[in-house]
Length: 456
Image (tube, rainbow, N blue to C red; front, top):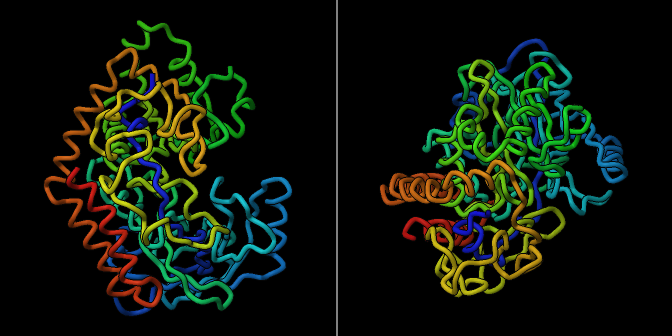
């Protein structure tokens, strides 16, 4: 049983593309930590780049090493680390670790791909133990689906307001090997440091891979290769495997009575409702299987952790992936049409209203536009079966619980003005500091698209 309220109302509009994600990196400091250049642009707060500043990142990478890395990925999807010198806000770091990051965002990558237009994971301490940038050891350079990436930046800030674990994010001006600078969004990587900031108990973090799902594959850990990846702690898939066995093979009665012991249900409901509120279909039940699971050791309980919000506020999947050139959507600029700006595919209501399409309920699990999982514009399947969510909905009246939480979050985030304040602050950084990287009209268009959700 799918959440019709989520999948049946999405508008698959043509949305502004950013071209691609850009390489950014951080170099290592050797044995000591260096400071940042004076001035606001160099500020690091709470272990990550200050979101109120546009930061400068310049990369120098060996071209042959870059080409070898691309060849390895295009040949067998291997993501190798390479070294680079990275200058962050005027502070140069040598021997930083750079590795391709993502899956669908790497589609179409080739030997001709420009490094500033690819998604990267950056590690200060990959090749030099203890290296960091004012306490920051990692940075993810995101694949963006709009020219400004305001949608993901705002989504992450709102996620933090719900009390759920989120990632800090900041915009950068990026140049690679002397290229013209480009506007990019960066965020924290979900690593040991991030876990320490967000959870105060011992446990393990697992990442659901886009190539996998939440099915139970038996007790052999090798069966979960390319399905889940353990991100933190000593290798141990037993808690994950036992959890997957329960959500897939328990009787209906045992599922109903035992779910709350095995997963933080309240946080899961808030997570599902939040993804609805920001109109992000690419979540735990989306095509990318985007989610992490945090296992708290003492409680022996899982918490669903949100990840990947570059499709938040109705953006089309793949709109900003590398190689597409950053074109504008049909009929306009920025992210595209705001909710309510026209008839939705299939006769549905604008996203975010919490209801089913006006012409009746869509077939279970079908995205707007009809059967076969095809989104208008070739976006592909919008849903993926997930035993946890599907059984929660069908056996425990999950959709009703999510609907009530969705209403609460809209009041808390939208009606209260919190979301508008966050959006204004994020947009101001771009209009005040990134004028050479993005047209103000593009920022305003993206801002209006996002703001339209606040009154729906």
